[in-house]
Amino acid sequence: MSNMRLFKPHELPGTLICVEGIDGSGKSTQLAILRDWLKSKNLDVIFTEWNSSDLISQTTKKAKKKNLLSPRTFSLLHAVDFADRLEQIIIPAMKAGFIVLADRYVYTAFARDVARGVEKDWVRNMYGFAIKPDLALYYSISAEISLERICSNRAPSFYEAGMDLKLSNNPYKSYVIFQNRVNEEYMNMVDEFGLVKIDANNTIHSKQVLLRQHVTELLSKKGINI
Ligand SMILES: Nc1ncnc2c1ncn2[C@@H]1O[C@H](COP(=O)(O)OP(=O)(O)O)[C@@H](O)[C@H]1O
Ligand SMILES: [Mg+2]
Image (tube, rainbow, N blue to C red; front, top):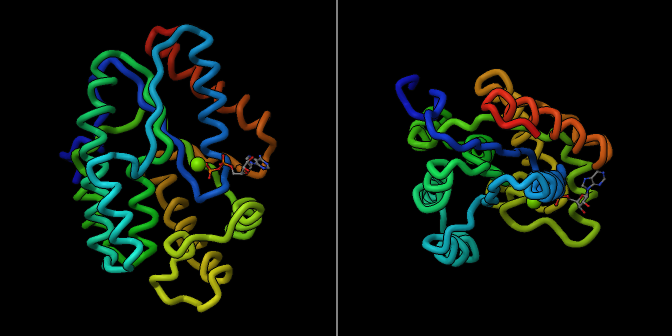
């Protein structure tokens, strides 16, 4: 597996930073503030989200609605979506020297798909074409707190709750069981991929301070002093 691109530092001029963690861990909040700050320093920044490529997202949406997908097929569709976004957005921006902020990256697939029962090696091999991020953060939060945060506005969706796995008929219970599994996979990836684990229970402000420290240090190694 070590001959794959995902396991070697990239040699592109840009900087790839990604955030990971279950829903409600505060990823989007942190990246949005970071983006504004980097832009205020006149740096070229682009933002990209999981499962957002036009090519595939319509198809996945339809198939998800009908609950037609096996875990492997689900995994495959996300990989196609990701491949499109990598080639169309991430790599061109990296070649142009941009800072790319990714709200979820391949580790999302590794965590969720394996939590759904897909083989670890199979999914890692499938994403082996991805470039290795310069910095990958894992915002760690319990499934219960995550549920509280997301359910202040809505109920968990069918797939967020892992209802396809028939863990429980109760979507809230199912959510906690499934997202705990996802968290367990993320925990394993701290050593495996060097994810930087951050306690997501901390305040938005203190998490932003920490994130900026990591980013400042990373950029200074590349000769960008902010
Ligand atoms: N440190 C925090 N403490 C309490 N609530 C938070 C914190 N960070 C984010 N939130 C809130 O939790 C919700 C989910 O945050 P969000 O950034 O959208 O998470 P994610 O992108 O990981 O799903 C939002 O309503 C946000 O305002
Ligand atoms: Mg988000």
